[in-house]
Image 1 (cartoon, rainbow, N blue to C red):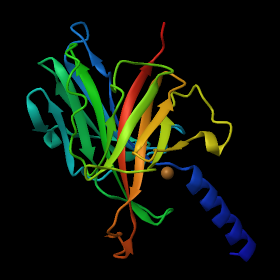
Image 2 (image 1 turned 135 degrees about the vertical axis):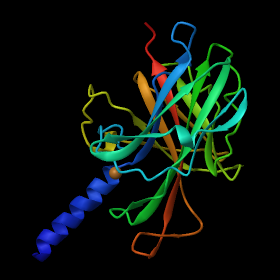
Image 3 (image 1 turned 90 degrees about the horizontal axis):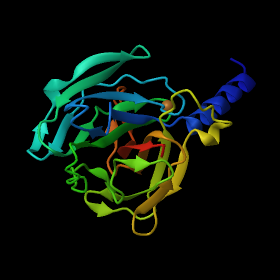
Image 4 (image 1 turned 90 degrees about the vertical axis):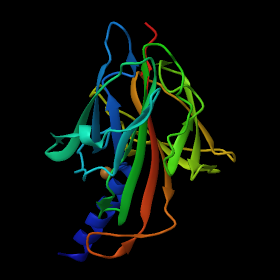
Length: 255
Ligand SMILES: [Cu+2]
């Protein structure tokens, strides 16, 4: 391969890397369960590029998947069923809410090796589903190593609301943490350039970030830190690890 072609490909790889934000999705059919909707909820677990509508990356067998609800903590790893998204491994889970309360679903995916960025990626992800109008429990921590503590109640949100969260690492606030934000594109928006795919914000000196959601649908917030310890990639080399703490929230139009 000629040097200039190589340089061109490298440039392309760098540019696509910059625009290419992986997000672990953990999306329930709805963030609100009512007597009309019933208590059944299906969650889809996909590692993808939400704003660009894919392509998905293959997920390994998750390390943890569970829920913290009014009955306490429940391991749901056994509930996962395999599915395919863009021909890649993804998962689904069905859950039945029987008691009123907030249900904090959480996921620790298998570490993912990203050769394009030379790092392993672990996105600890959560989403809160409100069951039958009890409207309490959402502000308790799940206890993930990197976790966004919502300062705005993370369901029943209107489009245009300011969503605020506190980034924690091992329980401690992370000053100036970087947070990436993506909207889960339903196909109605074409980002005009790479910069519009992922919004990038920083937490303040107390680890608190804010973002006003300009469109209805699902929004993913990913606080990204680098782990202190490297991991070994599939080639057996020590590589850096991106630790993400993600929360998904849904905004609705005020119709
Ligand atoms: Cu990517």
